[in-house]
Image (cartoon, rainbow over all chains, first blue to last red):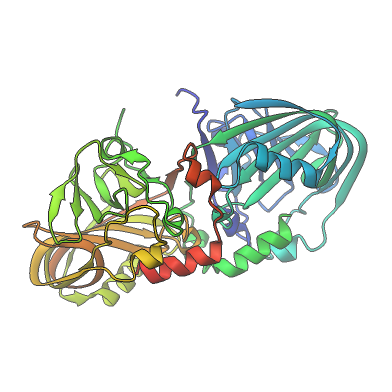
Amino acid sequence: MAKDTTTIFQQGTLGLLVPGLYDGTITAGELLQHGDAGIGTLTGLNGEVIILDGHAYQAREDGVVREIAADETLPFASVHFEAPDATKALTPMDQPTFEQQTVHDYQLSNVFAAIRIDGTFKHIHTRVAPKQTKPYHTLVEATATQPEFTGDDVQGTIIGYYAPHLFQGATVGGFHLHFLSADHQLGGHLLGFDIDQATLKVQRFADFHVHLPIDNADYLQQKFDNNEIDSAINKAER
Amino acid sequence: MAKDTTTIFQQGTLGLLVPGLYDGTITAGELLQHGDAGIGTLTGLNGEVIILDGHAYQAREDGVVREIAADETLPFASVHFEAPDATKALTPMDQPTFEQQTVHDYQLSNVFAAIRIDGTFKHIHTRVAPKQTKPYHTLVEATATQPEFTGDDVQGTIIGYYAPHLFQGATVGGFHLHFLSADHQLGGHLLGFDIDQATLKVQRFADFHVHLPIDNADYLQQKFDNNEIDSAINKAER
């Protein structure tokens, strides 16, 4: 199968995590057939997944980063095959400046895009979702208390997506970024960052492909509420 | 290219019609490469498109139904290749009963599905969006006054989709059905129907593939508002 560099593939929806549907519905091995870069979470909302250069890593709540085996499963993940449209050297700037500039420079408002930033960061602030056991709590409950990690003058990579706000619920509207340090000592869902010197790669996508777990009984029976999903994403994923 | 019978392909979003982005972004010829059945509208919000057995038809505001040429363009359409999972004989029932039964019987709440009903209908009630010229009005304005058509004891086909409500905005959450009579004398967006004797075909999809017009300047620059889109869809598409 030729690598499709024009499509973001997403397993599940962010919305299904909101009421607590954390059982994995795709293996890491299958997922990597749809992309060599991306983000996600493991079954049980177990940590933050960072996929770089064809390898999937888990940032665990105890701070450890480990490579994920092909048979581990994920309830939610987004991946793509890297083929950036644009590369740009970034000078020192904070996160709000970066986000505002990037949406403007690449006209991202209504476009899906992959964002990759390799370089050194003056400051990195992450969180890692703590592993849940059944019966699962909701996403807001599960992430109400969660370990946060920080680093100064860190070398590493930010990877993730910008999605049109119309797709909030199906995914995270706006930026959804994870981080992995070059030495694998720091990772997770990004709460904040401050760029020192880095290289930005932007890849815009016309195509967004969602795969839903339509054979999963819990998914089929769940009563979703769009307003609750929107508010939970704004609380738990930013 | 092998026919993919597991994916709904959608050009654009319902959301982009809301502020009036009615310029076509895909030709009918290209669209038919992604499916042989489906629904949509033509450039200028010019009528209702019904795609059956590989042929695309326009139900026009003057009541005429005509086949669409390969080079005509559409701003929004959903298509799939037909390969139903289930076929069922339907006895007389009204639209609310049909919709409630079908969601229940095929566990559609959180699933994309194509719906096709061939048979005779005691009553059919359609509307057809009137062709707009630039500068385009919004969807709610454009559909505020529009021709409606009715028929009794009509033979024909209902074609369309059920989509999870989470995807309201990207598409129409819930049912979105069009109609074409066997004699091509009556067609359009379905406002109501009453089944006499018919055959239902249901095709569930794990995969939903959206193609966005990311090279269209109007699309890139549009400021969308999720609440406005939600309310406009509920007003204009039900």
